[in-house]
Image (cartoon, rainbow, N blue to C red):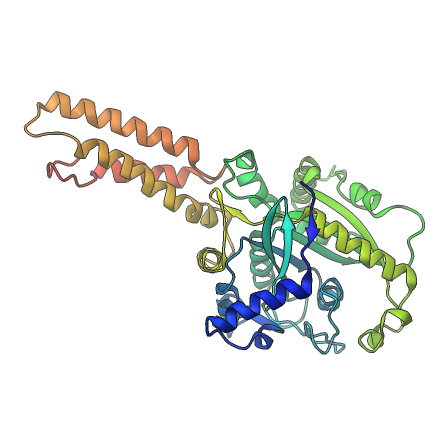
Length: 408
């Protein structure tokens, strides 16, 4: 079934009439941007902002997220306002000074209601702090990038003019995530679906190479006769991104106007007509690839999404650098519990007294069933080993049974 934007005014009115009847806050309070993640004092790790999380918890529909990432001062906040048809004074804060305006990660408080393949979905738009600004560590940028990668259904990589090698290098975490979970994105066995990557190249002219050609060329391997380790690492990222090409697309957007510091004072009639047309086309492209966020086989409503965010943030704040392995542990935690319950139920079904050889045989059967379930459902291609070791340790030391105190 196709996709269509739900009637905006009617949908919003019905939502807020229902909220008012339930005694919720004034709907106008949500017509603004909220922080959901902020930097800590040292600007190295991230912490939750409850104000923004409360806005998300209200959502009852399945959630999809459109996130925008890119260098600081590259127009991410302005782009989001354009996608949401919001003016600068009402929408996300847009700064024209040299310091970055957005700190951490922000959302627009009122989700956009969409029909996606017959399901009503609430789409959150997410603004991120730009990377490469002064006063921040690289690991902080990595955490912002990683969190946006995990949360988003569509990840817009907003880049000025061209694709640099550094821009590709920053996708290393996104590649790790996609490689870890890609094998399970099929049919009803969706463990965690990587975000659709949209390369958005903003440039002053659209002649010459298409942006898809630019991206394809940027993803071609670079000769490395000297054996440079950095070049080798970036080439590996290029290879992975090329393999996952069906999960990404490229789009070009001309500059709205030469006087960029005055964009917020202009309406559509004053902007470049080609920009206005391409912007509307971009809205359609984004709308066509949006899907609700799937985690462990199910969509997430507001409360579930916040719980997911809390777990992911905890994993990304572990250690000195954000780790894909930490994320895999989070995803496998519930599966480990299910596997241990399978073992426990099998052992609890024994009636005592029972011969030791029969007890050993039942233990082996229960152990095999738990391991088979883990092998079928676990997440991660390269980092699942630690979770498997934990399963083995828990079974080895014994799961307490109602029938006996014996441990295996």
